Image (cartoon, rainbow, N blue to C red):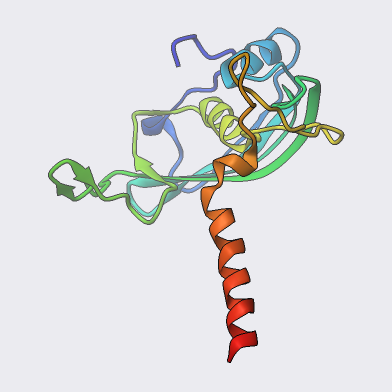
Length: 188
C-alpha cells in the first residue's frame, strides 16, 4: 500500500505478553472510513469493525484471530448502480518465527497448503490485517438485483452483426450429428 494506513495499531512483538492475549477492537469512523474505501477500491465503507486478539502460540509464534464486520458500497459491474454488501468474516493469521521457505523449483514456486501462515514480523498491525481482510472479502463482481445483461450485436457498417450463435461453430455440428443419428436409426 502506498498510502499511509488511515487506522493503525502497531504492536511490537517483543513487547507482547507471552501468557495473556492482547485484545483489540477497531471501529474506524468518518474520514478514516473514506480512506479505507479508497484503499480497497470501494465507493464507500459505511461501517467497519474488527475485534479479536493476538496471542502467543508456543515459544516464538503468534496467532491473530478476529471477526471482521463491514458494510461496503461498490458499483454494479453491469449498470454501475451502487450495490451494498454486508461482510461478516472470521480472520485467522499465524505468524511463524521459523517460517519454512517455499520449495524452489526453478521458475515455479509451490504454494504452501496453509495460507494463514506468514513470517513473524517485528511489528504486527491488526489494522493492516483488517484492511487486507476487507479487500479480500469484498465481492469481485458486485451485481445489482435487477441487473441483466442484454444481448448486443456488433459489426462493421454494411455487414451482418456477429451473434452468439455465429461464434459457436460446433453448435451446428451437434445438430447435424443428431440429424444423422436419427436417419441412421430409421435405416437399420
